[in-house]
Amino acid sequence: MEDIEIAQENEANKIQTITAVAGDIGLDPTDIEQYGPYKAKITTSALERLRQRPQGKLVLVTAINPTPAGEGKSTVAVGLADAMHRKGQKAVLALREPSLGPVMGMKGGATGGGYAQVVPMADINLHFTGDMHALTSAVNTLAALIDNHLQQGNALHIDPRRIQWKRVLDINDRALRHVTVGLGGPTSGVPREDGFDITVASELMAVLCLAEDLGDLKERIARIVIAYTYGREPVTVEMLGVTGAITMLLKDAIKPNLVQTLEHTPVLIHGGPFANIAHGCNSVVATRTALALGDIAITEAGFGADLGAEKFLDIKAPVLGKTPDAAVVVATLRALKYNGGVALKDLQTSNLDAIRTGFANLERHIHNLQRYGLPVVVAINAFATDDPAETQLVQDCAPTRGSRPSRRPSGPMVRRWGGTS
Image 1 (cartoon, rainbow, N blue to C red):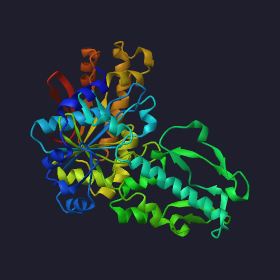
Image 2 (image 1 turned 90 degrees about the horizontal axis):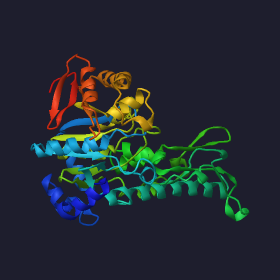
Image 3 (image 1 turned 180 degrees about the vertical axis):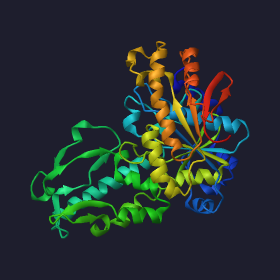
Image 4 (image 1 turned 45 degrees about the vertical axis):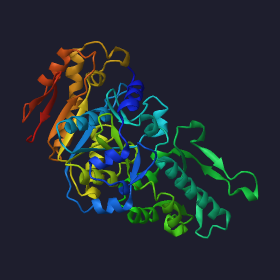
């Protein structure tokens, strides 16, 4: 069955109401704002109360270098949370929110795969609770206010050639990456070059995901540099006098979204900055809430451990006030072969030499994370077509320092480097 078929079949029969999911982690109906029966936002008052609670353990899921074949960080993160939930652990998962750009492109959705999925899958991958729309509106409102300032006399002496703030859409649109605005005469604005980014690549998305609450978000927005003057002095949102208006457009988007996996493990999905542009992690608010609601919070960082995970540790963790207690590096045999020089079309063919060569990529990511003093678990995201000899070779290539295998029912698939259990 395809992922979407699995999700649709199980949603119809097994999905719980969001009030039941909230109740399992100690939230009352008054602590959530429902968006239909299966998704909700956590209220501001509940978030403030939860900040006073002790924090649980934090597990960070990352991966080796991403390839066109995909590594499955979200799928492994969901599966890990479900496994802990089955064992009676109070686990809460915190993930990034999908963008329509990747959803409609090669990458597809961001809710896991197979039976390790977050639901309602279609809602999450499409409009969800409107966070992306709110961010898009906020970014474009600020862009419109900048152009209006130019039109009304430009009291701040903004140089139209040095405006840093672009407009956005939550979809890839090549034709709008570089445009000219303000055409049409004196009533249509000041002509200048502009462009559209994708919403998740905006600075406002990054700021939202690092903010601790609405007040902190407002302060961060005020400091954003939107342009430079003719004298090359920075111009901020606060100087434009529109900080409050932009913040109010995000008053609901700052609240994390609560959903569930197919096995009813609670999931907080919130924020989604790209890791190649920003820090590539879900929001500080969502992760902190997961740490308060569960004994174990599981989250992920975008791209490989040399990008998303290091940004998590260098940028997000200091704001969060919490360093991960362990890291999981996801790898697949096909990705190891791809990094070992095998063409995409040949990845299904067994190739032990390519595994040996590609293992250097995995080993480097382990080393990168160990520099932070983290215990590292390597999870092989297994596929039905995997060659057992290749899987065994990965384990045989593993560093011997402090390592020992863990087992899944189907056989040895996980190996641990450093630290203690």
